[in-house]
Structures are given as C-alpha cells and as structure tokens.
Length: 382
Image 1: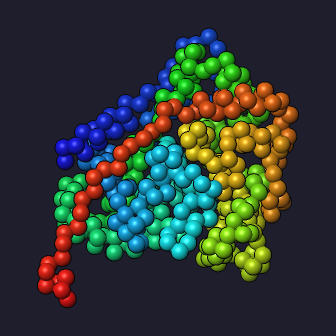
Image 2: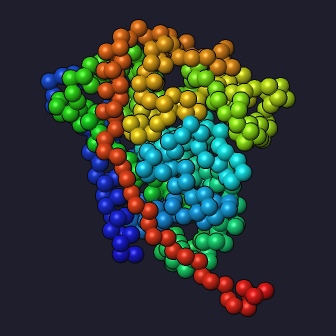
Image 3: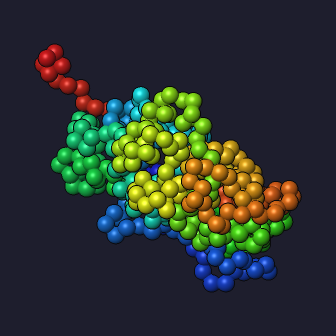
C-alpha cells in the first residue's frame, strides 16, 4: 500500500483543495456573465473519497480484468497520452467489432450530471458499469469479472479494506473506478486563473476570443457555466461518419446498434447516420441530437464531435461559422446554427481562447498491476 497510498493522497488533496471562485474578481477587466472558474468536483454522499478507494480505482481502471475478454480495460479507450480519450474518429471496440462513436475524455467528467453522448448514465458509477458491460466495448459479465478479481490476493485484500467485502463485489469496483475518475480534474487553466482575477492569465488575442465567445459567436448559448456545457441536446448538422459507407466492420457494428436499441424497421434498413438521443427516447424530435460536451481539455482530445468528423479546433470554429453542416436529420437541426460572419482573424482569436480552456497535459504512468494466483497443480492438470 505504500507507493499507491502516496499517489492517492496527492490526488485526494488536489481534488479537495482545488481553488474555488469566491467574491468579486480582483481584476480590471469585467468577466462575462454565464461563465465561471471550475471548483472542486461534487462527491456523492454514498461514495465518499478515500485514499485507499482512489488507489483501488486507479488499478481497476488500467486492469483488463474489468472486461469481457480480459483485454479491454477502461484505459483502452481513455488513454492518458491521447487526452484520456482516443485520438481517432471512432473509438475501439471489443475484438471483432469497432465502436460507433468518438471516445470522450474523462478529464472533468466528475462534473457532468449526464454521461455519454446521449446522456444514458447519470453518474460515474453507472457510467463505469455501462462501459464495462457494453456490447461493443467492455462486453463483461459481472460474475465473471468478480471471479477474476477474487483470484487476485491483492484485490481480495483491497476490497476487504475499502468496502469490507469477503469477495470482491463488482458494483464496488465501479464505485472505486468512479472515485479515481473524480481525481482527474483540471481547475487551473489560463481561463480559470483569468476568471479568478488574474488579468495576465490570458493573452490579448485570447481576451478578444473570449469577447467573441460570449458575444458575436454566441458560443455561450450552449457552452456556459463552470463546465462550459449546458448538458442539453442539439443537432448541429455534423455530417455522418464516413465509415458507415466503406468500412465493413463499422457497418456491421452500426447495424447491430440500430437493431439492439430498438430502431424501427425503416431506420434499421436505411439510415446511414447516428440517431443520437433518439436511441434512448424514440422521439423523432430527438434524431441526430447529442449532449453538449465541455470545452475543457479539448486541446488534447482531437478529433471532435460525436463521430470525430472535425479534426482540429479551427475546423470546429469554421464549422460553426458556416452555420453547421448537413446530415440525415435536417428537420431537427438546431435553429441556433446560423452563419456567424466571423473574419479569419476572429476565427483565430476564438481558437486561441479555446486553447486557454486547457492547462498542462495530465499524464500518468500505469500502475503495477497484481497478478492472479496460479491454479493448484491438480486443477491445472484436469
């Protein structure tokens, strides 16, 4: 417990002592209303943070035992050196499949009240369970994952210490993973420091970009609050993922998702685009709509949008400047998507501001993972 405990103590201290904006900003320039610096993440009463729980969660996050085939840990789709996501349009899937959406970063995911692109999970605990059991990602069965954990003496000891388990409980595993994820926050970006009163934290170009963000470009209409997300759902006209046309594996996986999520026969046979929130609601008004993502840490999480169809932050700003794009669900496209009339220099200013929403890259070495007990000789021979 020595090395891991010291790391857990640093993480827990960082979360619980993150700076909070209080009182008026001690600065000359007024800050736009509707935006704020990010404070400590909310901690649920039924899953309090402890050093031992955080360290257990970190191990489980990187351990492939929490997956169907003992090869797909959480970190497979949330790589620290890829923005804690996947720097590809579509995320990885269980062997023999691919995913059908872009992998979102888990940095600052502790602040969301809705997880995943269509808001299907309402907590990090539920998100961890859904990801581990997902048919094209983790594909794990709870009893099998518990049995694997029980064969590892270190896990038996740690589950007993943290949760009082005689046998590792998979729901407790998800709670530990969620506790670890709540340490992956960034509250000291140039933007946060500026909002707390440090005028020098942003360059003149970034300040111009902030004015555009809250004014002419109207990004603040959806990207507001400390998280820079209203957590609502919109169809922006993002064009469909090209793989639906020319990637056989992607086609098969996408058809499976359409079928598994109860789509109509017509949708199943003819659509070549992601229905988004409609998968959950079955309301035609929700076709093509996705939850507003936070703009924090986006410097490291390219490509962008639910299907990774925009490569750079400048591509994103140009996309909005053009009034969005076109997809199969034109009838649900948000009326907010109108040409902005930004000049090239204004686009550059806005991109510069977006870069201020990311601090230093958060990197982490994978922990040394414990190993299973070998089977008794007689059992192995049988």
